[in-house]
Amino acid sequence: MAETSSKPPYRRGPLKTVWPSSARPLSHRAARRADEGYGLSDSPDWRGIDWPAHTHQVEVDGIPVNYDDLGEGIPVVFIHGLGGCWQNWLENLPRFAEGHRAIALDLPGFGRTPMPSEPISITFFARIVDHFCEALDLGRVSLVGNSMGGFTAAETAIRHPERVDDLVLVDAAGITSATISESPIGERVARAVLSRGQGEGQQVDLSRLLKRPGLIALAMGFVARYPTLISRDVLAEQLLSVGAPGFQDSFDAIIAYDFRDRIGEISCPTLIVQGAEDILVPLGDAHHYAEVIEGGEIIVFDDTGHVPMLERPVDFNNAVIEFIDRVGVQ
Image (cartoon, rainbow, N blue to C red; front, top):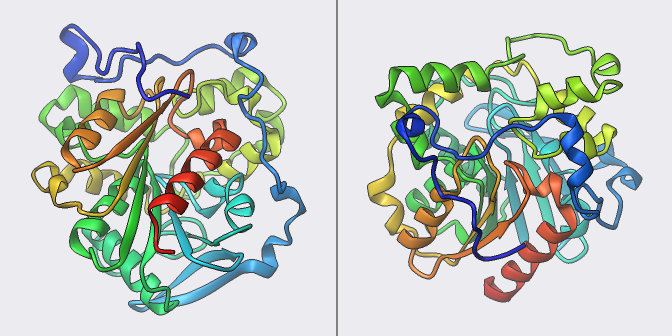
């Protein structure tokens, strides 16, 4: 973990407008060079939690929103990314719940929350998050979002500042994602990469995939740096969200919305967390957030991809809890 990295913030050369990240996917054999902390679960272990007892639904703008609610205290709300679900935070919720009320929701069109009747947009997701917090009478919250969830969390902080006490953006979309549509080739590449195996209702043969390191690397190599080192049961929980009905509409919403001229309106304490080897969101995007948001802090995890909360749960939890406890409402 470091605040700076030797990794180039963006790809150099003529392909930088097609795929701006300088990171590359690795073969499963590359996992031999990972450090011993990669993929290590934190304590309390999520496997010891009776998750059904903590899973609920609440109606938000006419949509039954599925969520998990663990612990007591100042609320921390977690927002998953594109193609994700609340289980993206399995390695984090138990640790946060030791001193906070840790809540993770399924956005409309993902997990067990159905598609909405109105069009999906980042602004729509931000409104849902705000109204979700209102429905649970949470007041001001710490908001943690990954990828599209980070984009949504930032939009929530801009449009509903009275809701967000502090903000954690984890490999957040919203910067170079706004330029994808400017490059027809780049948009096709991004759509092809992100849509692999994401056909609506598509079934994944988990038993076959999880037994073969090469298939794991192929399926998850654009998301995690060393996916074969993440526990198989953790991977299985992530892959259950494949084929979400909201995927394509949400991808379109990400590339259609440009809020770069409004990021500076974020006024709450903000931590930017980034994997230095993120293939999907370039390292330069994290630095852009940190430079534009007044007082923004940045932590870069070296040798880490797009989901540091799953790749390095112990270090991620330590860093984010320290930040929230230091800057949040006491």
